[in-house]
Image (cartoon, rainbow, N blue to C red):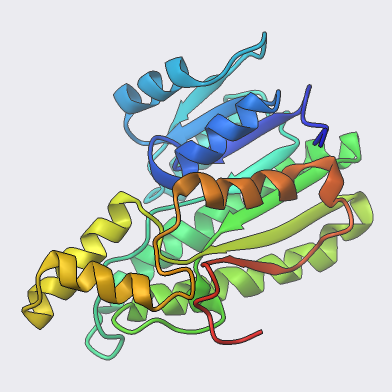
Amino acid sequence: MNLGLINKNALVCGSTQGIGKATAMLLASEGAAVTLVARNEEKLKAVLEELPNEGQKHSYIVADFSNPAQLKEQLEASPLTYHILVNNTGGPAGGPVFTAEIAAFEKAFTQHLKCNHVLAQAVVPFMKEEGYGRIINIISTSVKQPLDGLGVSNTIRGAVANWSKTLANELGAHKITVNNVLPGATATERLTEIIKNKAAKTGKSLEEVAEIMKNASPAKRFAAPEEVANAVVFLASEKASFINGINVPVDGGRTKSL
């Protein structure tokens, strides 16, 4: 299938590892010019060298998502000619919602919703001019079914999903779509941290915790980051032009709701 991504420019956040990196690699392999965004410049340079290249001009932006004002300045200093925006940020620390500190909510709200908004405001004017825009937010299945032990994450992910749906309604007439991809348990550094935390709290081994988590999905395994990236890249393509304002779980069937 020709996804129509040649001559498209993509801005991919959190793209030095995990799902973000897999998405950047796949977009580049489909012909898109990719701008990587993350806070570690050395890692950005390393991934930049790995990106498939058939003549595209790939680049990167160093940005810390704890500072939306700084992110806005860095974006304004770069060519804002993006057809595709992939919002992706590492999840908040785990723990019960009741005992969470207010600062934890504020930090997560800034890193996820505020920075997503800054990014969208930066790229949408060009998308409107081009008559082509794709905003894909990589969130979590907690949007549909809150996950135990991830109180702050559940709360903020829900806010991002509602922001996204509202944005989809506002931008649809401009041929800009806004959708959410909801990964389940995916083999990333984030999942490793979650497994370690659960093992420490339950006294179970890392292997036991991992097996329990795998068995929660009908697929009985973790997703590879590339499997989530496949969904992201399809939604970024010309083929997904009439898919707008939805949540797409990529979790092997774990989520119980429809």
